[in-house]
Image (cartoon, rainbow, N blue to C red; front, side, top):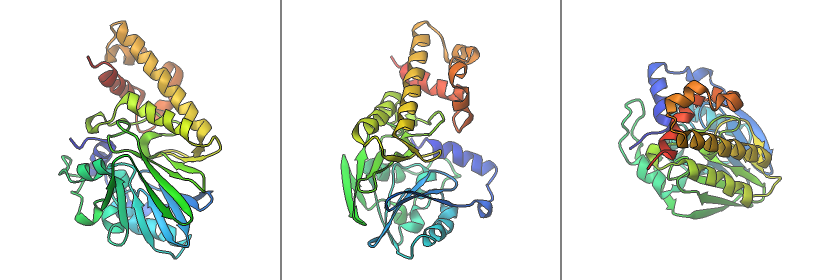
Length: 289
């Protein structure tokens, strides 16, 4: 079932298409040879060097030319690789354009899900050039621009095809949508994601990467490991709050009425996922028999 952030986002786009011409792609230097591009959709990681350009995710198809222009402002080298952190359209929409000349690499479940005809008519079927041509199961490495760029699969997190990308020499982590900085995350339960798997992915990153690593979130501003720790603490507390209410016989409606999350985390529900919607996700997953 193709059900995720792309479903909701593309549904809203179908109702009111954004003016793609007015969207700016902003470039931010992260560390070493790595940059971050901010536009509409998931944050893009960019490795620049003598070997060329490698990008992590590529937002929406109508922004491909703007993304290319933003990269041209950094280097004239060609884009040779695209790493997809997962399959959602706000991270893979540019695949068909970039895949004409670059090699797309992703977890095998990303390719599998991109091959499934979308249930939402606002999201086009992925073309052949947009499909990953190299897939992996557990992890993969791309040795490029003097970097050992590692893609590490984290199962049952945001989806069942998530990868965290680590640029070892630049000491930069791209979390994909396993990190929404400063806001409640979207966990795609219909595409193999899970609440506990999501938290496990965040905790794995905290334990595995250096404390001074820069962290590119799937959504939100550039951050570091301390921000990731704060995010994990909020996740653990929200899980505890909802589990406690479930044990007391409370329903999702009861929890929303009592504002069990807003009492502590009101600002976290002002992003893509509201507090009420996050309660629904937690109850749906944690309340399984």
